[in-house]
Image (cartoon, rainbow, N blue to C red; front, side):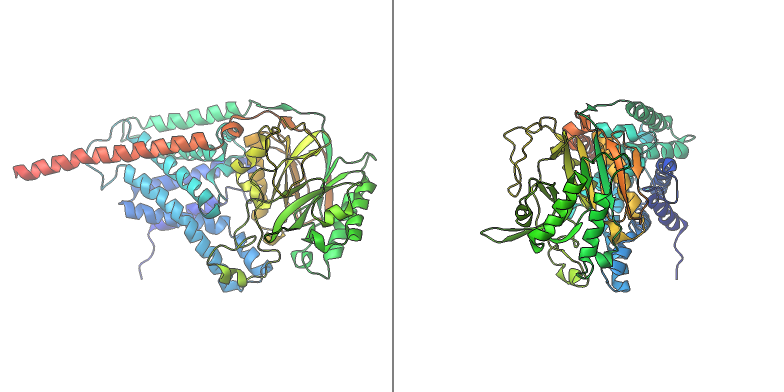
Length: 564
């Protein structure tokens, strides 16, 4: 039996190291950007030194298996511990998903190696641009693969290279070009360093990629000092509730009432200074049944709690709409206060509601052909309809709060419509009541995420999700509120820093004061379009350049054959 080569082992270990660059565990937050750059630079060296394009493809795949095998290992916890899937099938689920995602990393290294010079490339002396072209090819291919991975089959953009740079010298680019732009610049920086180390003594112009890497870091640090927004209105007081309900109890009929009571007790607690809270945010499925399964009296207890606290409650609840064609089911959020009608809550028509648009495959909808896989799990509330892509923010105490639920804040561009200015001609979601506050010209001034991450235990998923929320703030310069069942419940200020946070897997209520902002960052105005345009142009140029370089060599070979 042949032992794996050193390059394959190296690719696997580098991939595993790369997978640890997306949450401050075990490395501290300040070190994550450098871990990502170092691991990716190692992959660049292995790719460029590989003997052929097929070999580079295998190296990219192995790197991906290490990267995703470590980075999304928490899926095993979700499948086996909480969805009660048998261990072998849960392991197979993680391996198969990692293998699928590794196809994108393999495609990236394959293209990068095809463009770059190597043993199977046309003969000739490297030019001063060779190292720079190889650097650009690696970053372009990787980022393009990241984007395809993030949109294909509803997308899985987890562990995008840009998320390793929520802190560090590149974070300033986020407000300009978004996470995909940061990913491109991060991989360009890593590849530039690798190209210089490899070719400093053998190729002219090897210093160009290094100079580009230094320039990217300096400009990123400078951009981080620019603010594109201004404060909107007065700060509001918020309370974020984390009841830490065990997942086995959360949907158990014997414990549902105790769970809701636990949430209401935390929401009702008096504040330290005796002043009321403007917004009390409770997690996803704080009410873990459909709204019409609670009686008006049961909803009356929530209304009474809001009246006691003199606060507006925004809480997660499963929503059922009965329409002439059929019943519709949503993973949703509703707003209520001490004056809300209990009957309106039962009907799912409170003053304001939000219905989740981007659903989780297997957890919230069943992809075609995978019913057998879902049947192997125990998944409550597992087949929802999609809410409208654009829904009005909640108007609370002079601020406009744009809701998203759990997985949705992984898709940065999908949060932008709520931030952009609204007009009287904008249509609300059909299931949504119009907002009484017409002052929405500024768009959302605060982002809010409600999640139930109990599905993933005490795993990397929790701090990884917090890092992604911080990237959303870096992109938009809107503060983010995060209310979760088990963690990470936190307030992120408009600069992207965690203002305050509850410890995971604890019971508590986090009180804070939050200042909303108005104005649009360049990324909030344009979304991913500029970065995608650059990637497409570079892919076209690199392909043209590679074919153009090969054609003269083939002509020269043909001429030699005729002469002989």
